[in-house]
Image (cartoon, rainbow, N blue to C red; front, side, top):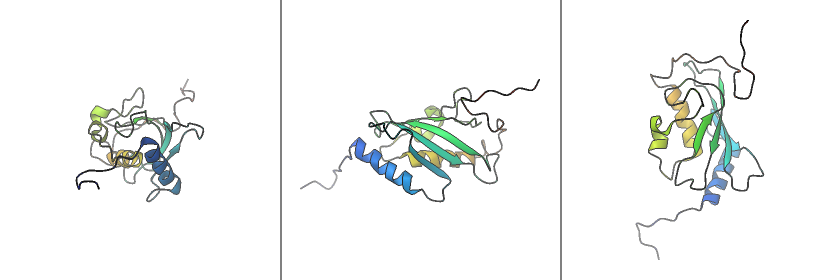
Length: 152
């Protein structure tokens, strides 16, 4: 018999399967979504996320693609998160698209019960914050891996 204060720690693989199932079912109002990047990844490390920009912000009508990487210590340690779509936000490195943990409280104060869904939802909420809702944004369609456009 367990004491009242003890809790069961769900193994990493079960936790990730639970998150995958939730991601595949669709989340809330559909403004964020996520899933496995590679179905053959038996370690379930590489994930893709999508955030639809919130209304009444400079992000409205935009769809942002992200990569999340859950290392072997997830969920004890947070995943690394990187925007593939170009975006200007106070917590994101403009050169790499990486969400800087020191500038994004959910990652710097990570708790085991946080999920990838929580991260995406919090990033979307951050888009509505005073410092981010009106920041000038890079032109759309300038995602990583695509040729850079220039006017001659």
